[in-house]
Length: 342
Image (cartoon, rainbow, N blue to C red; front, side, top):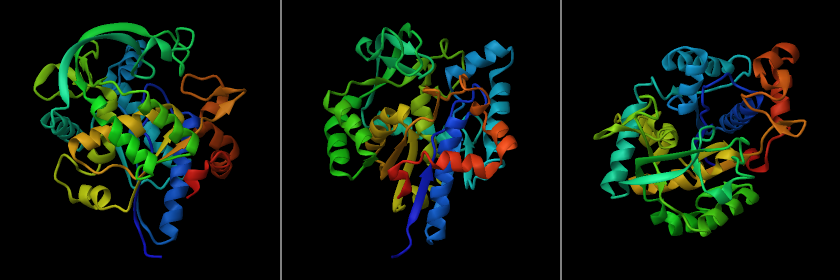
């Protein structure tokens, strides 16, 4: 079997707080998959980073009484430094607020969608969960609360830029249903297809500068808005390759790669398997080939998160100090899902 070129990425976490073991699970699984492909002779790039341009980060900095950039820098370093205790073999690690590659990439992606006619402005009012950085319909809430965080969303009314997601429903259904865009395991693929078949609505892809507290990447040509954190963050997978700077790495690792694999948690499947491919279709760029979805790591029936709930189990560095790197890596790998093994 001839060698393949494999681009493998983890999601990039908010840095409103320190890392938890649930995210370490994804890092270790990605690292093991990268090591496997390297051992078989494949050419591999393992990409990770931090999602800095989030309102969650701004609010955390306000609560801590410090500047957002200072909190983001400190927590971002802590995430990057997990490579030591967890023995991770990153090839690159991007911080979206400071890496000089990212803003040009986000701006280029925005303009490509704009040229396609897929961006427009309109007034909007909806229920917004800051924890998810996502609008929800009332029917999607559980007892009036966010199904992910268990908190009541806030009602937001403003004028934003919207992306014509509704234009890409049929294409996405065909791509995912045919396996050309592989979403695994099957339960997650069926979940995504059901969401698409229910009818896609256009999504807000900007936030007012006032509500964002001035934090984020300005919308090209509109100083009153910043790019929505998810549009911004998803672009890291290609901005880190120099998509906005003319680097040959974009051609080498994205357009000419044999496999472009995103490892993601089940809570962000919609963003990666629906929004992100639609944005790439709009921009005229290749799609990922595979989206491998893992479940959450739980303790006592509760999801591990940066907000706590499982004591020292939430801190992978402390856990490594107590039990060692191999033990923590093994704990992450016994939860590995079938698509990640391949």
